[in-house]
Length: 382
Image 1 (tube, one colour):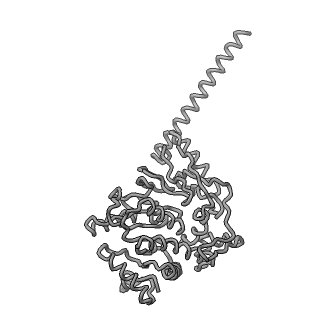
Image 2 (cartoon, helix red, strand yellow):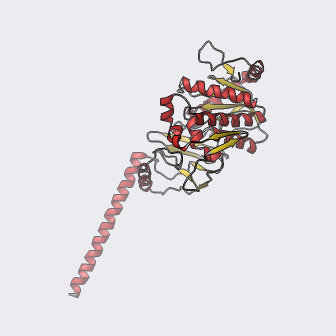
Image 3 (cartoon, one colour):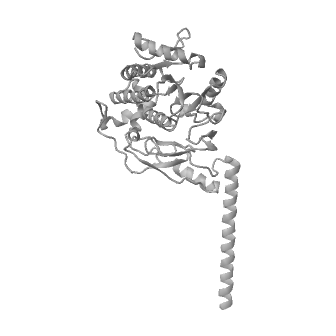
């Protein structure tokens, strides 16, 4: 009986060892399979976004890694401030600077370093100016115009001695809804904190986490956290400190008050609703006006012209409505402001300043130029 129990114990140990070895072999096989199928997509990598109380989030500094979307991979490098670098590398801030502001289109999400608009613009202006002009890319995915203003102001605070030549603000059709969606960051209502996003050394474990996150409900909500993955490898490294992000009933900008209506929240923050209507709601219009005032005030304080441009897929109705608000804001803030479809040559920078100022002084009306026979740029002021 004792021998039988002893043999049964040995057999149980053997079965457990065989089972454990089988599990290890399966895990090893799955790990190899994930690495063969996806390469380094689910390997260890630093967080892409980090927390910032005023901005909400911003790219992490000193990145030099490959990040992944659902069907693409992109190489991203950032400098010590988290500004994305192009093929020319670090920017010498003693140069004349064109400062690019915008969202993911300006940042260049979805394309690698040598393919981004900012990098190509940097190379072009550098060559055309004989090395005198460089581009600083302040673009960040998901930003609205308020956050773009706050990032520009932060840049000027951090680099007080720079010589800005132009501020280039790149508009896209979701800006007007992002202004509402992210208003709490600009108002310092939604503090954020950095969280650890260190990945496991096992690609299989990271794949499991990725699939788990992708299955969550990621429909954008104005009061939902903005650190959802949306099926992409952004590796968010921040979160809001408060579980619920409230929207104020009204906000005062100077002597002007903007009223928020919770009953129209979904309409006001949903890009699809905006595209179907083809017109701004009152709150969207008011917030865009205040956001542009913010940009123009920051630029005017540094004596720099703001050149407004739109991505190529922006519908005409959106361009016209934003251009009308730009004109109104430029007149209100007395900022030198130009709306254009073409980026000026470095030799034309002085002409941009002269035309913007002369346009406001003569107060003639000039619209966005679409025709090939139209001037290269036009004053946004009346």
